[in-house]
Length: 216
Image (tube, rainbow, N blue to C red):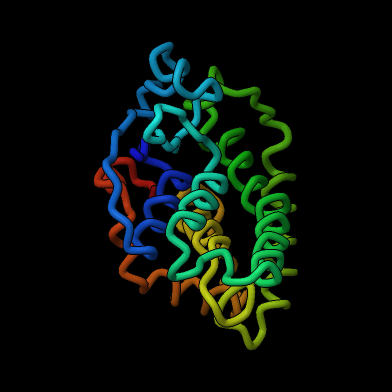
């Protein structure tokens, strides 16, 4: 297998997942800031034009960050980052859906439609008028999540899961592009500091993050 990756929070999620698993994969980089992922050569491999993607040994290319990490979990079950049992995996996936649908996707689109508009205006359908509401909705759900994390080290309880990595990479990116984490959210800020201190948080950063002035 080979990871096709780039700068950005979603590719970083997979790199951090790999680091937590202790998995080393060959990697191929695409320059998404220059739009390489929207060119014909890349689109033939991944028609959605997204990064990351995972090229399997038979040449099949699997996309979508969560799908890639699910596949890696199946092939390398330890340490479990989605869950050891069907019940643990169900809880993990429940929180994954809640966080992705209500927080991270809103934050990403809030960025694409506002601070990232010049980069994304010819790549996706941007709705600048929706940016502020999307950001506000995400912040409301972060307040909700903060209240539910009292007494927990991680989102699903006391075990690190995929969605912790996903939300951390999103928040770490968003804080530099107009969506800082509310300092009044004590549980989430404590969780963020714990995530930020993990060696995988540093090793997963793209080498160009300082030049881009965004943590991806």
